[in-house]
Image (cartoon, rainbow, N blue to C red; front, side):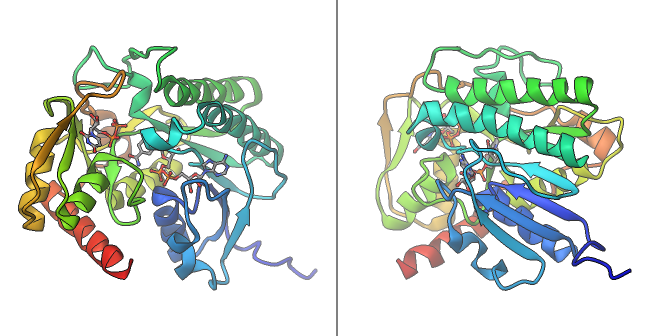
Length: 321
Ligand code: NAD
Ligand code: UDP
């Protein structure tokens, strides 16, 4: 019998594949020899992120909005489609909830039908403004259900619920990772996230906008480390469904991040204090002992190296603009 096309390869669907994390993931999976279908509605992602893959024989982009169902034949699904930066997910909050919840339902339905393994890109935002520090997976979180961040936080929490219910009810083979703040090349220059904002402001000689007094903390993971964690989780043991924290436990105040970016760019920019946004979490740091133990995963790229590589990316991007 003649073998149908590409069935000797794993067919992997990456939703949100033209975004920051998704494009790095597509690249990694194509490099490993898999057949990658990249699904995106280009809300925050861009074709520029995947230009270099478009001609590859094992890469196939599809323009599709995940709030609608789609029928495909795949072996694995990485579900990343969802705006991730506060200004983007608050732009159309109802759509954000639909993407997180309807998107999860449609992808879980697909996984159930074709018996695909499916990984959900959840978030540290499920912990809200945490009262436990650092955050372990056993912490249930502290989210304001009616605040400006709730469309994202509650959407992602509901998606986790759906993943575990599809697993219990329909035996879908799931994986859930809780991603902490991740940065690196291909972040959107206008997405308002702190690292991209500060680097772009520093390179343009504009003031670095600190929201609040800058004492709030975050822990920043370089993109290469995050992609390694996602792939390890997808390929990890079948009895380890998560949720598992993935992030770099190095914790910095936003003020320290601003000063470090000024130092590394050699910028003369000053700092400007602006009002804090609603429900801005005050502290965030992952406890990653579970990922270390079950996946043998630990981040390798320190803040100085990661920022240097990200600054280089934005320097080139801005010089072309
Ligand atoms: P991103 O905005 O760069 O990527 C999201 C992608 O999803 C974009 O390409 C966007 O166009 C696409 N998308 C949005 N809505 C869609 C829809 N309805 N249908 C189809 N595609 C849609 O963000 P990112 O940082 O790459 O985040 C990717 C995933 O990781 C998200 O699910 C996010 O919640 C999660 N995450 C990221 C971080 C981080 O720090 N980067 C932290 C926690 C969780
Ligand atoms: N932040 C800031 N200035 C900016 C952008 C963000 O001070 O120009 C702060 C923001 O208030 C938050 C932290 O940096 O306390 C991280 O914000 P980001 O949007 O990157 O991620 P998240 O809040 O989702 O963790």
